[in-house]
Length: 341
Image 1 (cartoon, rainbow, N blue to C red):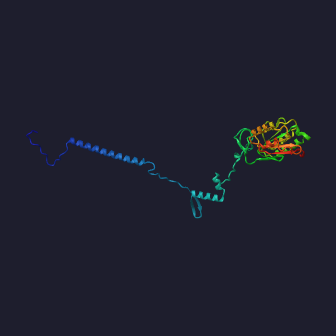
Image 2 (image 1 turned 180 degrees about the vertical axis):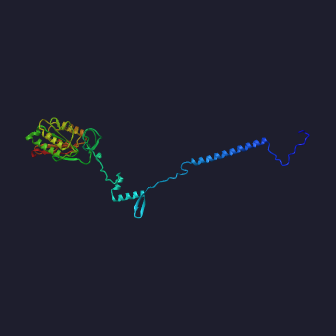
Image 3 (image 1 turned 60 degrees about the vertical axis):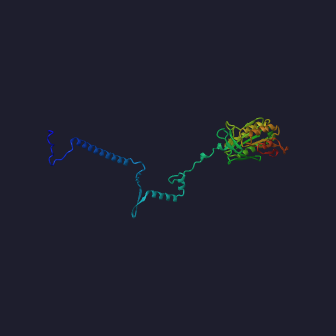
């Protein structure tokens, strides 16, 4: 078209359209917008779904479903369904009412309505050696009547079960008894009258002891002779067999020799007895003040020492070393007129 020609006039009824270049951008914008809206909707839907499935614990408590068992029994009216727990409780209540010991068995661990088993208390009871203090030097110290002792044949302190016995009227009480009797030549005078009397009294005293009590016998002249039952010279229990052996030992003793008191008493103290019965007819030699002090120091008040003095006729002196020995060691003394035995 030349510049001089007039512009073409659109024909009547035609529509003015968007140029092709502008239409391309319009279509692209519409496509991206729809895609964006679709993805946003998809993300929102996924988020809501995740929130519903990953709800924190406790926000929506889980519904618990339980199964309850019921018991069925037939009756004249038809089947009857009974709650099992209620039926068991009712049956247990009826059993308790019919058996008054059921509740006690349930409390102490008994089961099934069976008779309660006897309680074994043997493990809680002390052994014979623990009761009587078998001087083996093992185990914890035991509380005695006059203090806490340990070591060989420590003095026991059980309040019950003590033995009681007498020698010429002097009573001793405890678990362990030692008899220290003079067997020197002077005890054999008048046909062994003094020694035979002492033997009878000793055996009678030993017969009073029970099997949970212990004893030992020492005869002495210049030196002590201790009873040995088997290889041991320790205290022995007052069983029938030991008493028979003790009788044989006592009957074998004869009067002979001179007199030395202290070694026999010190030997008795080494056994840590509860009671010592010390018998002699010897006024000479007396225990000196130094000897009495040594004995008291060795004893430390643990054993009661009772003294028996043999003599012919009435007692002449009011007090001698035997009286002092008994007094200083918690015991008593007695004078025996052998002519009256």
